[in-house]
Amino acid sequence: MKTTNNAFSGFKFEKPVVETLKAGNHLVRVNSYSVTDSFHLLDGTEKDGIAEEIEAEDKWSDSTPQLAVVLMNKNGVMTYRFSANGYKQTDDYTSEQLEDDKYTVIGNYVCIRNKQKKLVRIVDDKRTAQAKRMLNQFLMSTKAKENDDLFEILDSCVANKTEIGITVKAKQYQDEEKLDISSFRTADAMTEKVAEGISSEEF
Picture 1: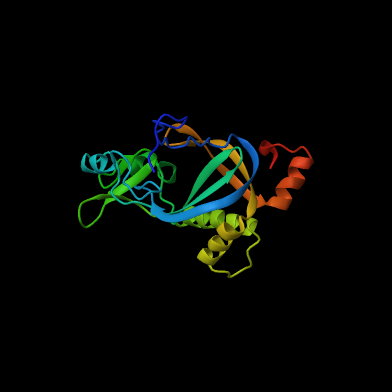
Picture 2 (picture 1 turned 90 degrees about the horizontal axis):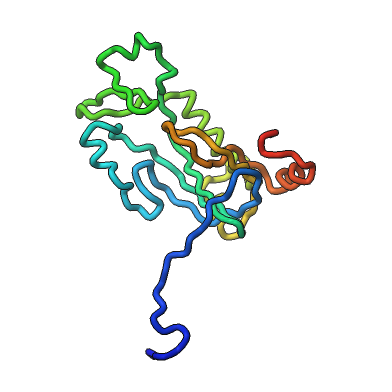
């Protein structure tokens, strides 16, 4: 029933503004997750300018498969994207090696051309292993059991509003400073650390 001349007349929906969690230690719950990649937002739409950057060869053409996990508490939200791969960067090569025409440097990443003549990054085993360790650290913080299925763990966390501890720090990425999660731990371990007065810089 449509009504007029009341306190809510003319009210229009506005998307709520959710604060990003500040640097420090936080107890959060697992709110949701999605399988995505580095070229797309969580709603599935492509990030602005990606196609144009690839066309202009200002960006590599291969996206990184990612698992995005949304973590939140009453103070705000933090989304962490776990990457399936890590890639070679400029510090993996000498300046002489990078002078080779087969390499193109974009940001900190070293790219080569694939069979389709598109610029792609070079998968690095060491950084890929680091990405896997970060995902396992997160899963350990949920008190998952070894060999449990990833998505069964995530579904259980969302259903049970599983609480974990995170440390948020400022990081440098592509010449920009941004807040990101630097470590995960169980809620019990985080509570103990905070009770002891240990700051995020100390662990």
